[in-house]
Length: 120
Picture 1: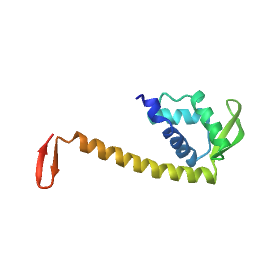
Picture 2: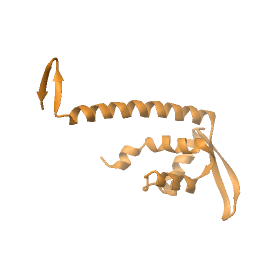
Picture 3: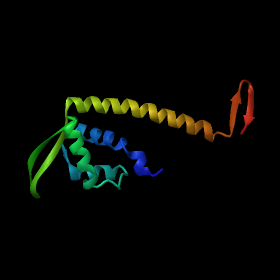
Picture 4: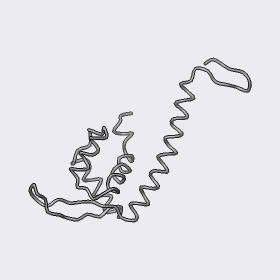
């Protein structure tokens, strides 16, 4: 499984988390994701996600003047977007916990069965 496949759905939550802190425009989102290690996400990848989020009323956008060229579209969270971020954080915590438990258990060379320690 590629990391791109694993990231589907997760990137939405990351975008909502970034937008929650302040209004941001698409290129800025791509830069921030890159700073967190998500180099494979360009503006071309992010804009369709933002458009879908806007249709789902998770974010709103406002055009603002830019000092470097044309107006920029800035995104901010709606109340619905804040709730979706909270839901994502809860789902992520559960998923992360479950995956870590599997990895920890399955990578351990010894496990306990009752009072007996069994080698794998």
